[in-house]
Length: 74
Image (cartoon, rainbow, N blue to C red; front, side, top):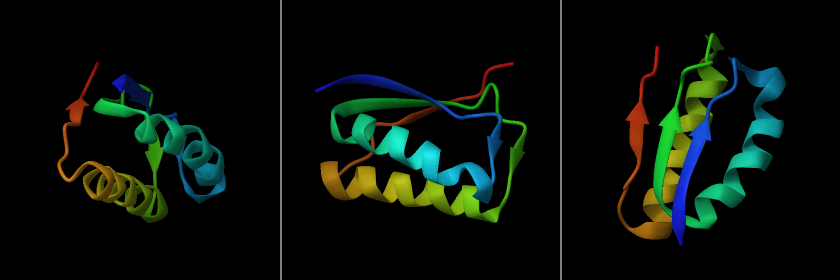
């Protein structure tokens, strides 16, 4: 297991969710310390929020705890 940094894309709307999900799921499976960076995020809709919550739920389900950190970078 390793540390992973998940950088959110600038657009996390329904049009781009499939690509983001396909990129992120393997990172979650192979990490026990995850940092989510939202530096580039400019646009998110309810589908994007739902995906982020589902990913956190997946981390909790797989690991039985959440070691993630949310890093707001300006």
